[in-house]
Amino acid sequence: MSDDPLFPADFLWGAATSAYQIEGSPLADGAGPSIWHRFAHTPGRVLNGDTGDLACDHYRRLVEDLDLMAGLGLGAYRFSVAWGRVLPEGRGSVNPKGLDFYRRLVDGLLERGIAPMLTLYHWDLPAALQDRGGWLNPDSPGWFADYADLMFRALDDRVPLWVTLNEPWVVTIPGHLDGELAPGHRDLFEPPRVAHHLLLAHAEAVAAYRALGRHRIGLAVNLEPQHPASASPEDRAAAARRDAFINRWFLDPLLLGVYPPELAALFGPAWPAFPDADLKRIQAPTDFIGVNYYSRGLVRADPDVQPLGAVRVTPEPAPRTTMDWEVYPQGLTETLLWLKERYANPPLYITENGAAFADGGPLDGETPDPRRVDYLRAHLLAAQEALAQGVDLRGYFVWSLFDNFEWARGYGQRFGLFQIDPVSLARVPKSSARYYRDLIRRHRGGSRGRGA
Ligand code: FCB
Image 1 (cartoon, protein in one colour):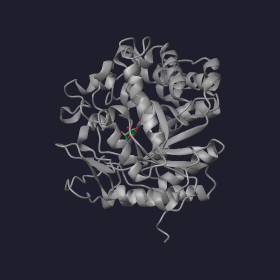
Image 2: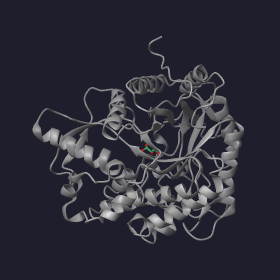
Image 3: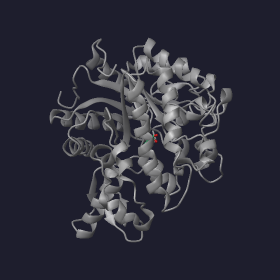
Image 4: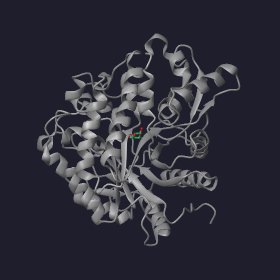
């Protein structure tokens, strides 16, 4: 059965979500608002005026959702903590009820034999910190490290896998240059500083973890191989620039101790001279890298797009998702092999992989989503190929457990293994949920993943 992925018995099988995308009740029990709450409530920012006020109502349906995960047979669950639930002002006094929600989540996972992978920051900065400049403030790495320290003390006895930041590139560019995601800024001078503070925030949190943590901590980045749209020298150069801009901006300083030189050239006067001492701090060893992989970048030179001078194009014809992302599974093998070669084979998890399709369908029984099943199978085979070529890949997390709030695109983009009945909020399995459950069952045969 060559088209059935086969992984080692200790491979970790997971699913991923994030707080603002699924929890709902953003201000419940004393939580402070986040920049996403603010952004979604600003007219014109999110498609159809959608917000995370209700989302999947996971905050109130925790036990039902934990049982659903157990039914899938998950070995691990990746979720994020809403910083503002725990620290309503982002710093200072703790909100015990917010912390208690995550204690119950972690305990509920462990009771069901599911290893928690906890992401500390998945884009929902407390609004009170944005009012102090957010990630532009040089104090922001310290704010983050204090919050991280609090979470380590509360949960490290029960959480084996920690992720500091989710996709710092997305915080940096769609958040501060394109204005598409919260906080919605458009300023060429902001991204270099924001990115630098995010890297320092990661490093400070890792340093805090080394002082008291007993498990493993890493960072999750969005990666996509960059291919030129034609053989022209301009397009080749554009693809190389985009590779530095997206794939290497965070990993080079973290793992090699230097920023890609292309960045200073691209940003010109907007690129500050960062102190060497900062780069030394940033390079502190990380236990693993989380890879979020969805597609590749097919790149055309375009001098009108600044600072990059490049645009991503979609090939015609090509299978693509409703996000307009090309389905390109071989790019996952390429990405994983690239990480192995460039960064000396670091331990890896695929912390997100999945696809949006318009697969609403009936709300009773099982929703057929054959394209998602094909997508998952093809990407797992691509991951298996990388493993066969010596990549240190330890686990895989589907994005996502549920159809959820897909940021500026609202609820129209459906990534879930389960859809949510809009009236009853019942969780309705898609055929991909059954596919994934059966795949896990075939592999686990009673054993626990090695991340647990
Ligand atoms: C990633 C995000 C995740 C989700 C997927 C589709 O960039 O980390 O929250 O939106 O894309």
